[in-house]
Length: 221
Ligand SMILES: *[C@@H]1O[C@H](CO)[C@@H](O)[C@H](O)[C@H]1NC(C)=O
Image 1 (cartoon, rainbow, N blue to C red):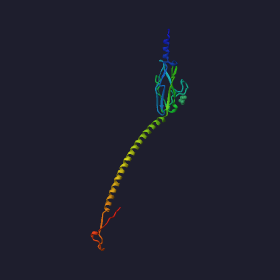
Image 2: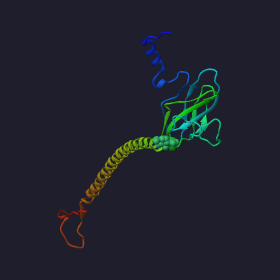
Image 3: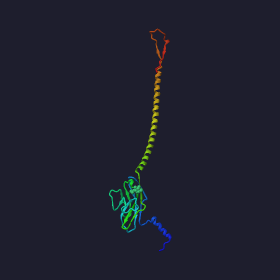
Image 4: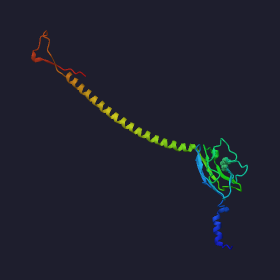
């Protein structure tokens, strides 16, 4: 069969970069960001030519081939009971990986590999898992809280100052009124003390007639 150049280029395009095989494929996000201490569920799926049976699945950090004795975080043929890396997938098409209570050292590029009764295949790109510090999240929360607190204190301060001013004004008015009242009272007593006292000369002392009355006045301060 003769193949023209155009058909050939279409075939090459379909094959994709690095001659990726459409029959052998691993699909997952390029990167995954998780906050330290929380759980990451990385969705993943894989395909292989029909007629093959998957015998083993493995997830490896920082290794593109992930074969044989390459250190791994999950190995279906060598399960670890206390692992924080749980395989939520199966041996058919799902390779979802769950990492519980992530720690900083989990940060790596994870590759999925599956082996069949024929050949094996590993995802070439891998998923870059980034673990962000829990503190940074807290620092954001803390700064928001502190801003809110500052605004609250400012408003509280303004209200307090206003109330304080109002109280001061009120007490000044009261004081003024009191002073006025006192002054009034003093004024009254002064009026009283200005009363004229008529003193009659003692009768023993011989004297001037009633027409010569002496007028005393006394000022009581
Ligand atoms: C993977 O590689 C990155 C970058 O070199 C490194 O920081 C990280 O510690 C490695 N992780 C593992 C689990 O090997």
